Structure formats: structure tokens, C-alpha cells
Length: 213
Length: 218
Image 1 (tube, helix red, strand yellow):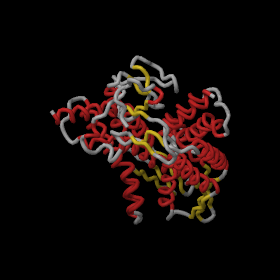
Image 2 (cartoon, helix red, strand yellow; image 1 turned 30 degrees about the horizontal axis):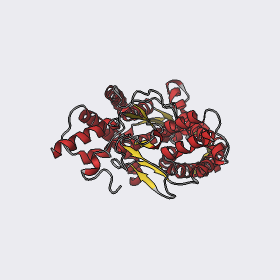
Image 3 (cartoon, helix red, strand yellow; image 1 turned 120 degrees about the vertical axis):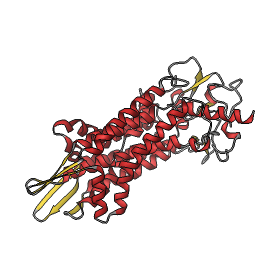
Image 4 (cartoon, chains in turn cyan, blue; image 1 turned 60 degrees about the horizontal axis):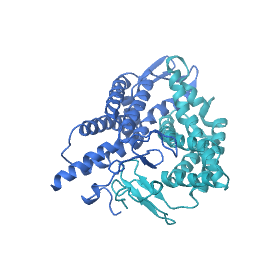
């Protein structure tokens, strides 16, 4: 697949590997085909005509579930007559006193703000494409930031943290999972599904073509 | 396309730089070498990050500095009637193991001790190798960086565990759990090492591997 120089090939058809800089010439990708970098194996292009629609549908679902997560009780702890209830919002605010305050903000960012921002930027950039409309202004900016935010959105890691906390508290009291708990679990699964559909080259090419129309 | 990254033939590749072009790492579009801003996505274009080494070392040292107090000071302060008990990261792991929850104890130990320490060693080693013509084990190097970059965020588990425990266990007089200063240090350490891994320009590492392969053949 490696192109032998740029001579003759228009620059639009060339794709560089973001990991190792190897140059590839990519034409139309057949349905269901996955192209990997010849040198380092990074996925370069994915041939799925429905990918954009699927990404948008999954992102919208995750965003709706996210609103349930923030407002409903997450976990309830019972120990005899005492009961303690925590929502995700209370969890992120648990460091809000004194020197810990910045940490509270950071946890809020990792668990709620950045995952929501990522979903919102994706929907803004790709939503109109899924229903065959022209892209909204700022679509390129939104799509670029959706990718930059990726490592910092840590909802799935928070879920593992919840599992560990449950084990730690198992002796102390009985725990009940609220609706927010199950919603959050669903978000993690949906987001993972959504990310497997993404390939930088394929998405950007679709956005390019939509703009030209 | 078979077995990428293995065997000699696939180690050499015609890169965007070889072709007098610069590739965008945000959207994979290529442009003539002197372009500064990507015309498709608006990202900044650099063929090879010139200051990547300094930034990798700076973030790595900052991360290491915060990792030490994160282990020395308490992560959790538990107050039950009349008693206050401090718990460090390793203390928390031992407590979990004491309950017989070996699987969970291992997850926490892996996320809070093995991943951070492994990451310091791995990034340091890669950054050290990139600075000189490295002469051995290219195949093992190939995906080490990707593993390091992917796994680093999972260290945050312990910080989230502390947040959940603090929010849940607030039975004012009977029992309460408060965060210790180590939680802040540990979170900062994880963020700094993530930034360190991100500052690393993997394309420079691949350039080195290509050079090594050429030397072997001549």
C-alpha cells in the first residue's frame, strides 16, 4: 500500500500514519474492509458506510443516559438505621473542602464534563452528516477536539473504581445500586462500541465530501 | 498487510517526510512540507516535534516527584467513634487482601503501583533510546509506547475509589472517611505521566528503527 513518492498522486489520496508517519495511498475502501499501516499496524481506514450514523446514534444514547446519571441517586449505603446516598455529582464534590478543591474539579472533569463534551462535539460535527444535511459551522474544530479529549474522558475507569469501592464496603454495610449506576454502566459499554467504529481518515474524508456538496 | 511490525521488509516505509510532505496527526491528511496549519482540520503541523524530548523528561520528572508523597502520605483518613486511622496506597491493598478479596487487591495494586512504576521506567527508557542510535531489540520497542500510552489513564482508579468512599461513608458521628493529601499527589502524578507519554513523538522512534534496519542490511 505504500506510495512510491508523491509524484503523480494527488495529495487528497495520500494518508499518513499518525503513529509512524508512513505514507499510504488509499482509494475507495471496500465495505467491511480494515486497512492497517504497513509498518506499525495502526488502523488507517475502515470501510463502513453506516459508521457515521452508528457513531451519532450511540453518542446521542450515551448523552441521554448521562443526564440520568447526574440527577438520580447512584449508590445507597445502609448500616442499621443509618442510610447514606450518593449521586455522581456528590461523588465528584467529595474533595470540595480546602486544599482538595482542585481535585474535586479534576474528578468532575474526568467523569462528567469531558465525557459529555466529547459526546457533544461528536454530535455537533457528525450529526448533520447522519441525516444528510450540510455540516454545521465549526464542525472541523469540534471533530478535532473530540479526538484530543479522548484520553481524558475516564468514565470507564470510574466504573472500575466503583467496583473496587463496593468490595471495600461489603463488610461495613449493605449497598444498593440506583438507576444512575446501571445507566453509567450502559454509557461505558456504548462509548466503547462507538470508539471501535472510528477511523480518523474515514471520518474526516466523509466530512470533507459533505462540505463540498 | 500481513503481520505489520514484524519481519524486516515491513520495518522500512516511505514516510511523509521522505516524500517532502508533512502529515497531520489529527486527521491524517498530508500537505507540502512548509505548511504550518492543516487545511482540513485546523491542527498544527510539525513533521517531527523538535522539543518533544525536553517535554517528555520535564513531565516525567514532575510525575515522579509527586509519586513519592503519594505513597508516603495517607490516601484515606477513616474516623470511627473515637478512632482515626490513616491508610496509604499500599495499606489499602493489604487491607483488601486481608479481607480475602485477592482479585480486587491485585487490580488496585496493578493500577496504583505496577502501572505507574512501569510507566516511569518505560517512558524513561524510550526517551533515552531515542536520543542516541539505539542498537538492540527493535521489535520489543515497537508497541511498548502504545501500551504505555493506553494503560496510563487506568491508574486513576484509586483516586476515584477514594472519591466514592468519601461521598458514601458520611455517618457523621459513627463513621466517616476523608481524603488524605496523597490523593491529590497521586492524581497529579498520573496526569503528569499521561502528559509525558503524549509529548513523546512516536514518529522519531520509528525513524530510529528504520535506520537500524538499514544498517543491518549494509
